[in-house]
Image 1 (cartoon, rainbow, N blue to C red):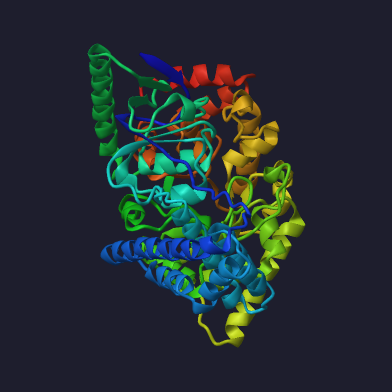
Image 2: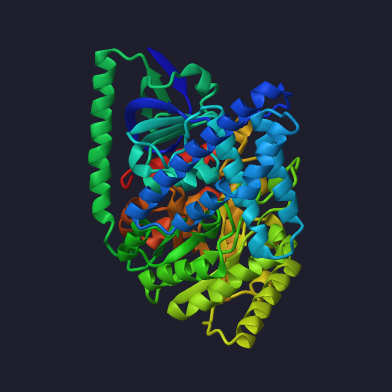
Length: 573
């Protein structure tokens, strides 16, 4: 039996066959061919076109069955694939200049992409992403490599990868992924967040897992104790089956609390809100038992596609979410790209420290038209419900005022163009210590705030939350974290303005009780944490929560805090 350790970031136990996910990257070399090889290379090109066309047709059929609106994108790719000018250029490079087919394809697409990049019309420039996608599809077909993506899985598997990027998880077919194992990533990575929201067991930070496992190998992932097991005997397999069954029964018992009102034993209501990303039908079903959306991660609308979502697309999606939640608040976080999240169709400069670089609101200030389009869509959708808009990565009062000015510009434009729009509340994410320390000033400028504990912990403790080698320094229960959160909560409570936690600590089985004791009355979390959090709330008194918070803030290490909370909450967990 082989045993490997990892970080269990999404609880559960699963067994199945390994699917080693490696995104395809074409290797293009410039080779001269002889004149008598030219027609063979032209035939290879047309064969690649036919293969790419068949893939696109299959995808369009699948989207049609699902009622997806992605068919238009497939149509655009079909047009590029069959563009006579493009074919003429590729075959010209092969026949006239005697270049090999892959070089001819790459050079032709590069020329078209450069031409489009000089055009000022945004609609035309958006075709660049389409061009890159079709180029990569053709090059892969030239190599005879089948398409591999997490949305095209045909049977249940355990996904193993070096890392999964948000664009990978955005297309993930949750019904075909039994568990996730990666070499990198931690508890606050987007892979972990998506896994928890989908209730998929996930074990991250398993060193060299892609070398240790074989495609198709049968393994067990124990994302409770942080173990990956292979080559097990029948006795060990039965042991894991029993453990999985016990966990399943406990989970079913906890889920009974899903639809209860989150009110403490002494009658204090706590709003339990939802963190969502895709605005899918499954996510919106949770509207029946939550008090609103505390975090709408709008960046997922920009991922897993090949162009920016239009104003009309965004308006329709935001409207759908608002209607699902009625009068309950829906908090839309504006585009949060950078750090560990990138868009395939935006070429951003490489940065030495991306988490400290041009990301989130800073990036939107660099590309104000992108943010303006999103704000226009949000304002137009606001007529359908109770929309709150918050800006991420705010570090100063200047950031707040600049963002608010863009909202006013968007309102003025809509008025001038005779679009109707609704009122919104404007808030900020508190995830940079600088804004936390001047919360008394920030509270005067905004309608509400939400604490992003994942980044707040990263920046407070000066530790890269994506780096497994320093994961022991990423301490979400560090006493400094709770003291800083307590300061923010008191400031907003004293001002009579809403304050929420939307980071992973909000749905944490140990941390949520401390947050309540610090004065937090709004907790937002992934769907998978709702039942457990409601269970804790309904078995807690505020007096007990306040005593727990006071004790925690006077302990000196994370280890002491974890040991104390595990014992203090043993009757609830």
